[in-house]
Structures are given as structure tokens and as C-alpha cells.
Image (tube, rainbow, N blue to C red):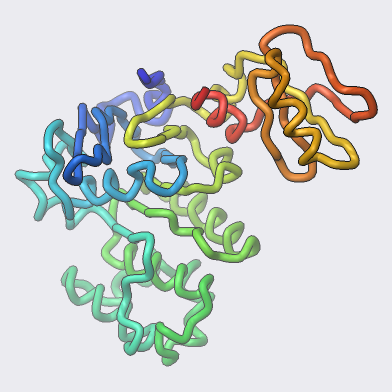
Length: 304
């Protein structure tokens, strides 16, 4: 499916994009992980890659982080080629993989010192860059990283990714498995980093996080379905959408799916979201009202 390549990165910076991907493809044997991925990201933008597990998010970010080679296509970070200039790129990016990848037997402070040393700097020299994040875990600086809670591990990993003052931050599903409060705190941190001029690429399977990005790319099975602002994506939803509920939503779902006039019907929280190919016709005894589509509704619509 052809993606809608929205050019709105120009509202963040009228110059050339700081991240540029052209026709990136990658296969693991017979499995096509990425299929001609093309997009650009403007300086100081929070760009979200939104899709389920197995969509290709991690493979794409590993290519951008110079950890994986694409089969074809090209990518650049601040004009530097991810293959030819990988050493230079590693100086200007911070990468936080999806799995906690720090040393569990080292303390918080020891992990941060280790990563600072790799980049030829110190915690003291770049403390201003990480202050707002690190001060939340600094009281536990002698605790082993493996003994931290999920939210604290997340903040430590982000501090390690930022300790060398990167210009571009690549975050692969940073909020997966983290409690809602820590998720909100993390996104507040990202907004602060954006205000400092850092360009942020973040992937997530949580559709509600799409609205926290400046632009998002919806990705499924290695293909980008659309790229736009969250508002642009929801505004383009082409059908009238209804929230429908009854005393037995599962029975109602089965009944609706047998109706040839029903284009789609799926469980969404405590209700069903339903759209029709023609005029809406509801079974008797159900509650319904027309609603605005969410990014998740738009993603599901792209699959039909």
C-alpha cells in the first residue's frame, strides 16, 4: 500500500531533513521485514513509528542506529550515510533499544560513568543534559541496575543515551511494559528534550501515544501505511464511526459481523466501534452514538 508522504516536517525546519530514508528494504530469509520504507524527519521533531509487534519498527531503528545493514535503499542522519559514515553517526545519535541493555550488575552511577567514558566525556561535564531525568534516580545511584523498577530502568537507559549530548535520539518502544504514570513522565521528558532542539524518533505499539508526536508513520508488516500529523490522520478517516454497546457485546459483535452492510466491527474498551458500507442499521436494544475516529481506528481502517 502506498504511504501518504506528508511534507509537514518543513514546519519544523525549512532546511534539509535531519533524518532521511529512501526505499529501505530488508528481509530475513523469506520474511520481508521492511518493504521500501521512505520518510524524512525535520530537526527538533518528535516523529513516531506506530505499529504492532513484528511490524518492522526495531529493524528500521537498528538500521538508522548503524547496527544493521539494509538489503537495499539508503538512509542518512544529518547528511551522513548510515553505512559509509557509521562512526560519525554514532557520535551524534543516542540509541535506546527496546530491551533493557545496560549492565545489571553495575550500579546506576557505574553504568552512566561507563557510557560517558565510551564517548570521551564525564557525568559532571554533561550533567546539565541529563539533570531533569537523572535527578529522579540519583538517590539510588549505588543500587544495581538490575534491581531497579521498570520506570527507573527506563530513566537510566535514557540518561545513558543522552550523556554525550546527541543531536538525534532513537527510542525503540521505550514505554513497553512500563506503568501508566511512568509512561506519562517519560513523555513529559521527551517534550523537554524536544524544546532543547533534540530530534526524537520513537516507536511504540501504544496507539494512544501517537497523539503525543508531531508526526507519525503507521507501519504494518514492513510497509508504511500513511505519514501525517495525528490530527491529519484522524481527520482523513473516510467513514462515519459509531460506538455501540449492549448487555452482551460479544454476542452483538458476532451479530454485526454477519451483517453484509457492516464494513468493520471490533471491540474498543467497553464498547464496539462499528462503521457501515452504507446507511447504518443497528439491532434493536443497543446503545449507539457517532464518534470521532482515533489513530487506532484509522490504523484498523488501513488494514481493510
